[in-house]
Length: 255
Image (cartoon, rainbow, N blue to C red):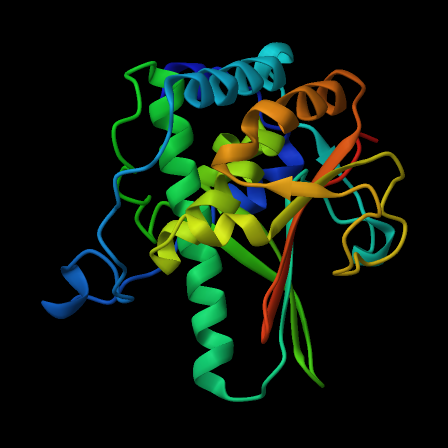
């Protein structure tokens, strides 16, 4: 793990998320990279300026050296990192629902790997390989039927990587989702907004009225708003609404 991330102090109440490990049964097939196939990393259209903005935001978030924790009342006050993923799949087929989970988990692991590369200061030439499924990912908190609604948080290495800079990593997750779909043009469908009120109720999938377009081409316009939200302990959200799948990456305001 990167030295800057290793120095971050993780609250003991999050140990239950870090100590969990996915058990991979022995076997030749399962010793390969991931049980889910994923496209090879694409050459990102990151400009040097965009890389510098992400790195600057990350350093700003990590300045106090601690992981902020939230205790949502609708989770019974359970401690989770300040990065929540919620999504909905409109159909009821098992393949589509499981594919949504896999794609979200892959986006989180890709974003975590990219965050490590940014912190090393090596420059970004391509998306690095995602964190392995045994290193970390998303943990299911709740699932509701009707349409397939899910609520997730982080586990493993991502508790520290994303928990120490949640706004930055949430933005990278949105870009990583588009990489998984094989196109950066999809970024035009993402919107983002700052959040000022605590999440006293389970999060909805509706974007905030003040939401603006988000994508790699929007880092110049949105980075100042992200920086302001970080400085004022506000939250931030990134929302994508597709025909059958809707998702939101939420960083709640600090408690």
